[in-house]
Length: 69
Image (cartoon, rainbow, N blue to C red; front, side, top):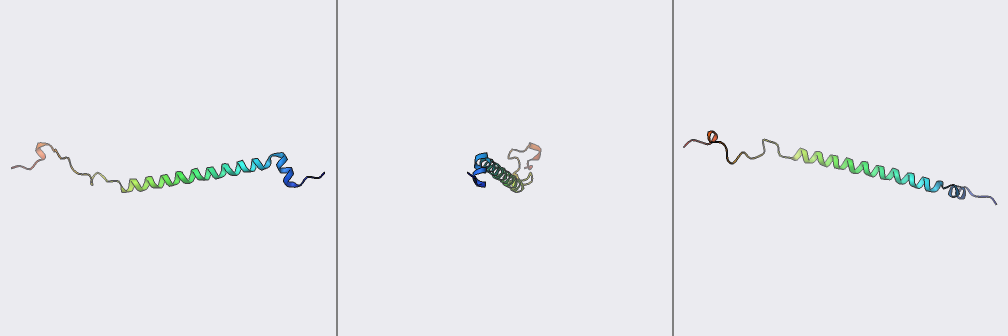
């Protein structure tokens, strides 16, 4: 009895090896995509964060900084 190419691949377990390899490649690409997205979101947050100049001053400044009356 002669086997077809598909049956030979299935008997040798190569179909599972190909499926596992493809699944690993897809998972790796997904992780890289999520990491790149998180990196860009972090850059956007840092770019829009208030700087030291934007922050309000000390409400209780030392006496020498208060206006004289």
